[in-house]
Image 1 (cartoon, rainbow over the protein chains, first blue to last red):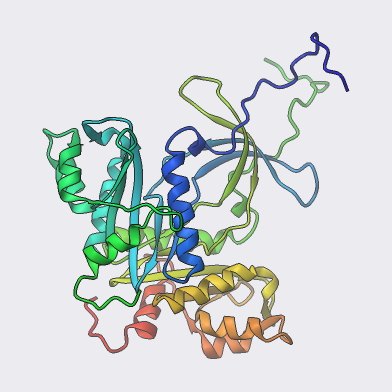
Image 2 (cartoon, chains in turn red, yellow; image 1 turned 45 degrees about the vertical axis):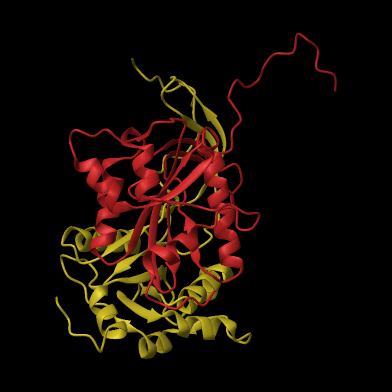
Length: 196
Length: 196
């Protein structure tokens, strides 16, 4: 079939697969790939939670299939990732920033901070993974540093130097892409003997 | 504006809010309400994971808002619920059945069984909550009973009597609607002294 220049556009929608394609996809993909690798070698059981969608209207073109024709992205109630590692509950949020100077708290919701604090209170491991894309550096930082800075009314961000000082640089490799569980071993399982 | 009888239908879609409205909503709502109560009284941090949606097409009616105009429900990779209780990772699936005789394994995906088995291997707590709606009874049953029955090629379901024998009946109340954490205390924290 030849598409003549006069052919009318039948659809003006943009084709994208997920909202996450728009921003932060590099880090998200790296973490997802790392989690798949960690699951496949039975080291940990960590998943990204699905992006919550408020479904408003559904069509049933066939009896067996449902097609969502109106839906909206909702603000997540918690963080993006959680799971199980060495018998412990793990919970974290991952964010990228293009800033060279700092990670701004605009990137993170207040209830996500509250959730990370709750995780720590209930005996779980909570942290953030922050990537400074312009340095190509990815840090794992315990949630307490971010919670403290967030609660300080004067601060609206955490400086790059502070993340570097309080966090740990995550080594990159082919598999896993981000060796972040090595940092978790060092930070949270120091007294144990490592079986890896 | 008067809608004359001759007015054409402009939209034949059905209005529903979520797929879960169609089935199992009673149990899902009871568990969600119970989890909200448990979170509010700081007893546990357990959430339902969002239903995964494969977003195919998004419109941007306004610059700031994204409207999903084509999406499909995906099969969940894991179970519906997970979280943190008394320092332990908790993971479970909840299902209703209208059968009086048994809970059929058609209701549960193979990779969900695999996931529950993985949770136990990694030191987490894994179970199912099964409601027999015609008896109005809701049971908590450790995942191992379901995994064993599922792996037995001859079995395609687990009998009601077996669930009654191996599981524990969950007491209902006003708040929480389902006191399922009392069962978790008895099943998984027997040797500890209870602080509740």
